[in-house]
Length: 570
Ligand code: 9MR
Image 1 (tube, rainbow, N blue to C red):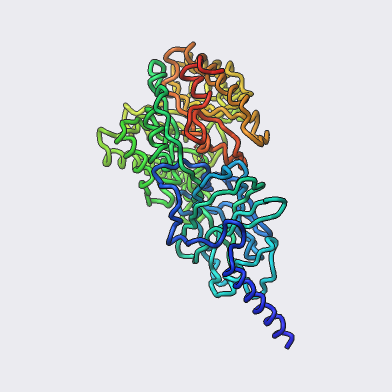
Image 2: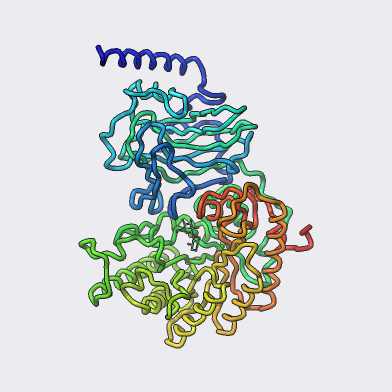
């Protein structure tokens, strides 16, 4: 009897909930919508959309947080694309999941398309559905429990919670069955009602407490037309240098692609040529993503800056481990193994480019070694896994192998961030001088130039002058100018004054480059438009950061005018 009573109460509760579910939406807009199999038909057509947010979890948790007892971390190896996904663990209630703040990301009253790829974490099977003891949750909404009680335990659901008229509201958007075997898309159109406060997106389950994996989250909206009555950036700067931008696959179609091909003459695949993308497992090369970007470049006559061959990040762990899992050390045997892997990687990339594109290979320049400089070290080199095994010589090896594999016409760069700082500039110049003295085929220095409004342009100019004196080529490879004065400054909107100031900054920067004619071989920004910037997700979610030339609607900002026609700045 003791057991029967709670069971009866639950059954009655479930019945009431089913009735509630049938009777009407749980919140203003929200009945569970069609599942992945039937995407909401009102979603904007893909060819007209711009991305307002994407989370790929390649570089951290991208601002996602655990909800309830859940914790989120990145998980390498189980990704839908790239190398990592988001692992959601420690769930003790079905609603415990992964949560992302949507404040500043979505525009109230505008339709967006939300797409989130999910699955249960491998090894998570056999966890208990929570339906049997459903007794309400923090959400105060037990509608999802009714689904669980209905027997579909392993469903995942996308929910937006928000405040409206002083009340918490839960918009249950879409749910779909999931397993551990395949990624499933939760996709729906969603319009945040005007007047909503604190909107948050989360992934929860309708029953299972299994660990979850989340990947490839995108929020898109219909893009306004690309401006056709403004000068092309590449024409405005034709006398100075080619202009480029980092791109991902979202940028290769529709309005973003139109913006890209209108203004830029070179592109850098933001992630597609990194070792994690190209060789996630030893000997297994995955060129699909790279091919997609490079095919686009060939089709549109764009040059490609290759990024990157040797780096301490975005390089799979297997590079640095022996067959038995042991970490490689500086023994002769381990050194030979790592060198062979380095060579095999670079050669495979070169061979692929040759086979696929022949003389039309669009990759003319490479960041051979990325972020190797550390001014704190005597020899100016960062102590990373390459260094731990091969010593300082790894840099020379990488350049020699690259020269051999790509031939004399490919320009080889040592690329780094922070070279505008005096100590890093000095260390980088020392390293380059040493390499040149040793006859290492390093052609140039890439200045990433991730700066903010607080970095004096004079420092950048000093850097350009220093390397011009060294006689090496210089490329600005990853320019962006954050409007926050430090990563810690929390902006709660995008102040107009900062955008104006940023316009002047870009203007000053160009003027500085022009005082050193011929010193800078190319200038690339790290992203096509603000919403595509890595700074939106690093070191945490920063929806108001706006470091690039075009805004979230793909429209020219003062930053663009600072480069193209400063007379247009207010
Ligand atoms: O923007 C890139 C981001 O999408 C990746 O997750 C991350 C890790 O691979 O790399 C970012 O790009 C970096 C570039 O490769 C090297 N310089 C710093 C860039 C910003 O972190």
